[in-house]
Length: 125
Image (cartoon, rainbow, N blue to C red; front, side):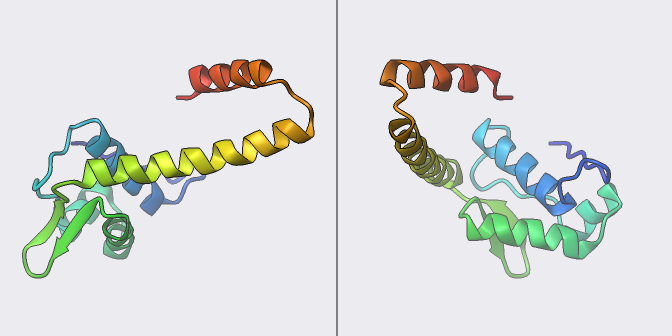
């Protein structure tokens, strides 16, 4: 797995690291139990602070995607991809609930809303 960060992207560097690791887990590029690079090694490779990598790893651990093992390193959680998919599905449900409320208040028919959703889904990166 190769991580690429940009200081001009507008997204915090720790967020870029988190996003790329999360995507690698979802895509199956990183498997459960696989070790991530050490904090110092990744910081050195990316030319960023160890604290930046630490924040990314800790937030991924809070999400259940990785596990920090004292004295051993950081590893992809055995069921990290499944936990993440469940969490993301919950976020989608919440967002759709809000969209549904707005659509009803704007008297947008369900068929038109579904067409809007299809367009948005197809336009997503």
